[in-house]
Amino acid sequence: MKSILVGILALTIAATGIAWTQQSAAPAQLTPASPQTAPASPDLAVTMKAMEEELRSVGRLTSTETISVKGKPPYSYPVSWEPMSVDADPKTCSLRVVERDERGTHNYAIYLEEIAGVGVLTLEDSINAGVSALNNEPSFHSIVFEPSLYSVRVGSWHQHNFEFQTRESAEQFAALLRESVNQCSAVPVTPRAPAIGSPSLTETISFIADKLTAQGVVSALANMTKDDLGFSMPVGSDINISKVSSQATCVIQLNDIGMDTDEVRLSLRRIGKIEVIKLKDSQPFAGMLQNGWRITSAPSTFVLEITAPGGESKELYFSDETLANRVAKAINHAAELCGAGANKEPF
Image: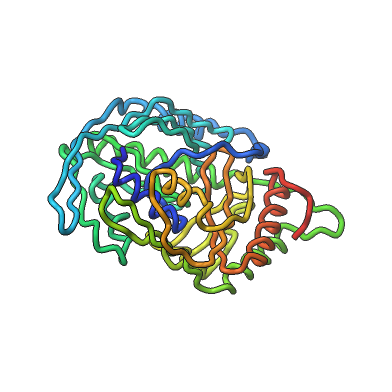
């Protein structure tokens, strides 16, 4: 469920690498190999089937959203959310959803080993948590829904909200999702052996960790204006990756990459496309420019955009283009060793 302004905020927070609502995106170019080396257990299949049915039973939810902006009168309008299609696949440990809200239809996939946490909040608390993360933006104040709905907030690289009519239903879905995440994260993965003379997966991840943690803080902050809304706003944040680890095979965990999160996970098996682009060309900023926003100023920042086969992008930020390209080649190599398919050039 996303209003026009909430959609703008989603794009705003996405520019830091962490979005709390789902956005649609163009399909990626490659399809990864199956992430599993063994059949899904009967328990996982049962759990994910129950999770799928729980989400399908939601139906169409409607509410009235009221946004309070400092210095302006509150304004309200109807909003809605409805899951149109749900596919919880235990063989690939993925949750694919087609949902419809007042802005249109959105199609995306969540890979369960990338989920770092699952929580249940009122929808107001979940969205206001994202708004409050804009510490340097004084314009946005609060959002209220009537009647109130409950959100299962899924913490991955991008935040996802699944809405429910009651807290009980939200808690049931959250419990099933947590159990599915636990089981999928425990599935063994065997990476491919590198070609003779090529770096191993361990060496490659070590290289990625060293380069990301050594570069320090990167400012990905741009100033945006939109005349018909009558105000300008900064977009982005200072990004700092303080720690990179690999607690599971083919999954990289990054800490402190930006606001509104302490941990995100990148599954190397789920990479469809890797490229280094300018800040204004990254998906969050490109989406805002298509909606009539203008960039008035932006730092010299380069984005390593990692696109999953389902279309959702993840962003890493660099102040040095050469370093961005070296890390891109390293991630490309690691993705190939993990079965995602990529070119064979080592970093």
